[in-house]
Length: 280
Image 1 (cartoon, helix red, strand yellow):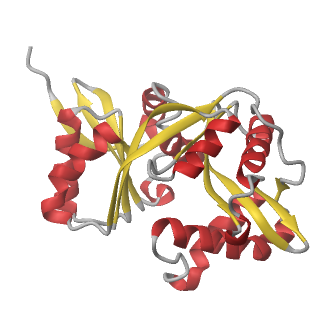
Image 2 (cartoon, rainbow, N blue to C red):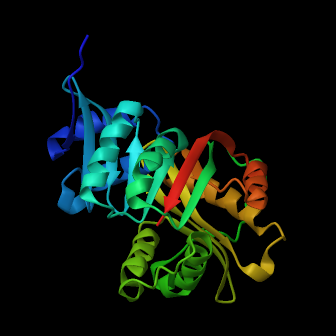
């Protein structure tokens, strides 16, 4: 039977159908679900567009096109139409990120027009836990207070620069990045261990849905690494996130970061898929 397939920019009236689609994999889709629940599908509020691959009148896949290009529930046909739209529009995003089985073919089709990338991270294990941590939580890790935004900001900048390879302060003097850090602090989604006015461990919850959240920005002061601070620190983050934010806590990590993967495993995180990131 011939299927009628098309791509269209989604509208606020599509929210319920999109949320139903995102619920198929709450862990992998938490970033996009977080955005949709926070601001809906109005491009002005979303900071970009949400593309829908529509088959026989039903939305079968979506792609968030903003600062990041994020395919969701996209099979080969959806990847093809998303790639065609992205090529015509030209690159506006800083990265492509999402499940490897979607990002890899999407990048294969976009690379001739968008390449070369600054960095490609082909295997990033997705880890998650819905259980209590399997190690003791660091009791000194707590939510960052609003009056501590400027105290925690340098560690956030250091983490971002180390992880991504460029400083978030290079654009607009860092105003947008500081605003994002402040937003997470005020939302109670920034956690740290602070000793004598110094951040020694920190992490944030960057994306939130009713069932899952995603940790980002895990960082330990360089001179204190190798002492196990990340294990107790992440156990505390899991406890606090499960108590105040969402029952399932997830993250994704570069496959070559064996120390971090070992720490997360000790805390109780279990594998749940593989992401891929393309950075520009």
